[in-house]
Image 1 (cartoon, rainbow over the protein chains, first blue to last red):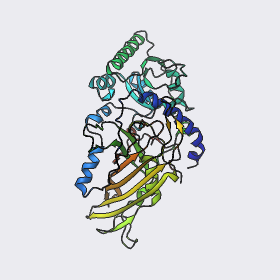
Image 2: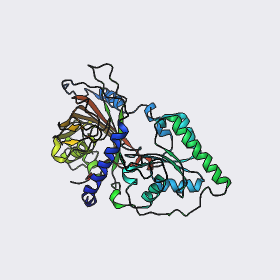
Image 3: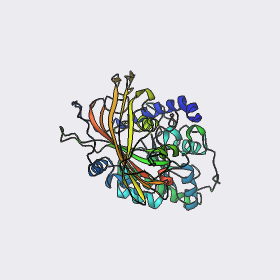
Image 4: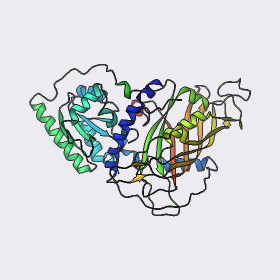
Length: 103
Length: 336
């Protein structure tokens, strides 16, 4: 799409800024294990049951989805309108990357 | 565990506030109503005016609809977040008692969004929810793979059509296929999926693959079952992406990332196609295999691999809370 082409240099600048932010945030994370192993041979799931098991092992479990019980609104403008209507303050979770998408 | 998985936090937010999420990559910069609002409250908050070490305004903010900040913090500790929220409620109640809780300033019924950040969802497209995660390591039983990340995939209508079964002679239209029939999915579809979604984001950020990084991208569909109502389709394929060294240095660690990174993945999936509605009712996809190397900000410098990684995708409804843009949407996501 034309808009994407127009936006690319600008967007990359924003991305790099954001990446620096994430680097700061993640620097407090627990250290990852340092190890190097030989590549394992790839094997596809032999049947649908194996596929389901693999899909399940990657997908979030119930505990990892608990944060979604809060009825997050993915738009500041929509949230402001709701806040005024309900006579409540707005709680804004602002991250490098939308928390409802990829952070 | 995320601070937002703490039941005390969930209950408090739900009772007292309208909870909103936003991407500061966009909201700090966008020139529109939402950007103006965010900058207004952020410049009253915990990182107001800050430029070093970064200009981030990341964090948690409680504010009135007219942009008066009540409290803010940048913390992943539940007790600190609870404390901040209680302070915000106390200030809100004080303002209510004084009759100034909110100015009642009219919020526009429509807004013009900054076009630099607004790419509309494609008509007739689908959304897949992506999860990426390290797979367990058989040679390292103590390895924990709790870290994971999400993204949304936007498929266009024409891409979705690629997956629909057609009759063997090509004249029967969608849903007329017979069991065992195979058909290739256009390379451009699996290549786009690989470029923007088979990216290791488990620990931190990595850029999308360039088109030239995609060394292999193939996907074949096979009709597994056919009934009067539906068709089950099995997918199998492979994607391999390799990016040469970038030479970019991480400004925090000083580490120069000068080794290639890549993924070599098998793609498998099962789709359910409803013949009457001409819609997919299930779109389960997995890409799993090896990743190696490191990007400047994805925190793999001590874990260069090759090690196993998996990407899982599931069809989700087009509800407002599911419409969050794919991470790379404004970086050539739909370009051909």
